[in-house]
Image (cartoon, rainbow, N blue to C red):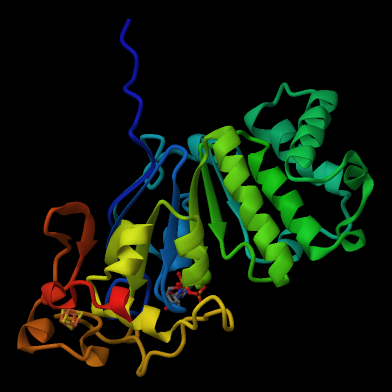
Length: 334
Ligand SMILES: Nc1ncnc2c1ncn2[C@@H]1O[C@H](COP(=O)(O)OP(=O)(O)OP(=O)(O)O)[C@@H](O)[C@H]1O
Ligand code: SF4
Ligand SMILES: [Mg+2]
């Protein structure tokens, strides 16, 4: 008997291109991104760069009229082409998402216990008995630092931080191989943010889940990630091991983000202080998407889109920049 090979990555996005109606260029343009089992990968970039679209593509949650090219594999299965039955199983089992605002994702009129148990009872494991589902929900509530009394409460009766823990427990109900967290802490106060982040790290270790963490917060990305992808105007500008990428950025956009981010000991950094705007979707691009804002752009930057290139001797660190060699070591000294 032959067994299917175990995929190396729980998430493997290759050449993902998404075009939306009425736009002059793809909103995601050739995105390559992977997450291995037990790995934490952050996706950072300015507002509108395509982080949410990228993470939602792993569940095939796409805007109406979206046309896709490329592949998005979760545990080896291509999400973009799978049938509805497999897609339902994927969304209730293999992959799960924790959203930014837990209150928006919950029905205020349903008890938290019913919310937690309904997906496993109606979808992936139809035979799951209510008592088993409740036992599993209780176990996961404990794992996220809550007790079983929460099961009987309504969303309006618990704090935002507790509700985000409930959402994380809900995401784990189907034993996902991949957890997608899209700005999961931005609606929370700073102390609760730190608790939720620590919780995600512990859960990753305990359950071996691969985590794709979408955030604006570079300090947070640096602190929690094994690897980081920096996105700009629907393309991956730079990727690499978190410590190396932040210490030795090889893309002017990453370097500008770092320069624009207040350090930890001052205020929390939001990515907004780079001069100029990203190109809007009504503009077609022939060259580098960052050219209009880049201090070291030359003619070639307007003529040809840069392909990702590895840093010398560091094959895991890639930057899509014609002149990345000029940045060697710059931010580390800043
Ligand atoms: N449903 C939609 N219909 C039309 N355009 C959309 C839709 N969803 C996203 N877009 C466009 O796609 C681009 C990328 O959006 P996306 O939400 O992925 O960005 P983001 O990086 O998550 O931004 P933010 O940091 O603000 O959450 C934006 O230009 C946005 O306007
Ligand atoms: S390719 Fe050119 S414009 Fe783009 S980031 Fe590099 S130097 Fe700047
Ligand atoms: Mg977003």
